[in-house]
Image 1 (cartoon, rainbow, N blue to C red):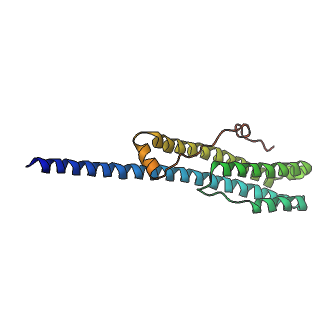
Image 2 (image 1 turned 120 degrees about the vertical axis):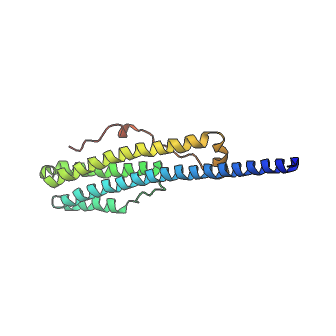
Image 3 (image 1 turned 180 degrees about the horizontal axis):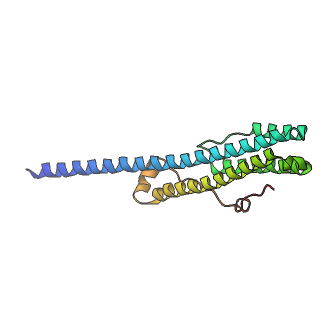
Length: 186
């Protein structure tokens, strides 16, 4: 074998190894990004279920306070649903809306003690609490997925592939005072 052939073979092997590494690194980024999107989708699903539970208890309250319950139901129908492509800021805005509606509903329930005592109210509020807990857990999974993606993107040499193909760092959910404790509905 001649020296030029050996050099050419070594260069060809190096190119193949580099291309294989590039493809594997790109595919790892795609997997990590999809994990983040899936985690956000899980949050969106839990939030939708939480809204559905609140909507059902508001609908049950219509027999006690037709106008107030109707207004709250209209607010719940006018909100924009979350999607896997939503951001933590979108979720935070939805949480503010949910808190506002829930606060207004709790004020309504205070005015009607027979509503608070009803089995429908108690059951629906237990569901709201359960979904609120699920949202908290889903946020933890989301932050874990973001950590894995951001860590991989920050490591050398995968950071080169990440920058080359536009894989941007993802945003974490931040802990807020209002989210540090489970809410109390009773």
